Image (cartoon, rainbow, N blue to C red; front, top):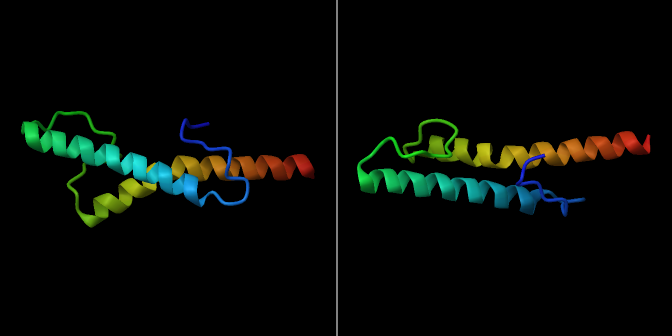
Length: 85
């Protein structure tokens, strides 16, 4: 599972999902600003696609950052459900 997986979300994955999305978006913005300051478009970015800072890009990156944690939660939920069946 992803390093962003937080096993503390037994009943409410919301805080872990939000934290993962915030970490990812912060890393994307950091790379974006570094690229702007250096006037160098070749600075590596964790963005899932080209990032310009518009609302569409921000939403896409929030979803990209949250998705691994959401997926891990549902995988855990499914495996727990299968184990109890």
